[in-house]
Amino acid sequence: MGLDDRRRRADRARQIADPATAVPPLVTALSDTNLDVRKAAVLASAPWAGAPEVTEALRSALTDTDADVRAHARHALTSQSHITA
Image (cartoon, rainbow, N blue to C red; front, side, top):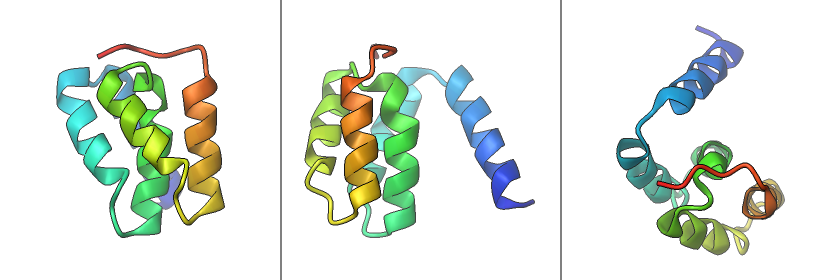
C-alpha cells in the first residue's frame, strides 16, 4: 500500500470517525517526537479544531519546530469548517 493510498484511507476514516474516539489519539499525536506523525495529526485534527482539547493542542503546535506543522495548525485554528466534539 503506497503513501497516497494510506492518506486516502486515513481521510475516509476521519470522515466517519466518532469524535470521542478520534480526538484523544490525535491530541496525543500532536506532541509526538516524530515530525511525520505531528504533521499527519495536525492535518487530521483540523475538522475538530472547535473542540476545546483540540484547540489547545493546535495552539501548542503553533510553536512547533517545523514550519509546516505551525502553518497547518494556524490554518486549522482559523478555518470555519469545524466539527465540535
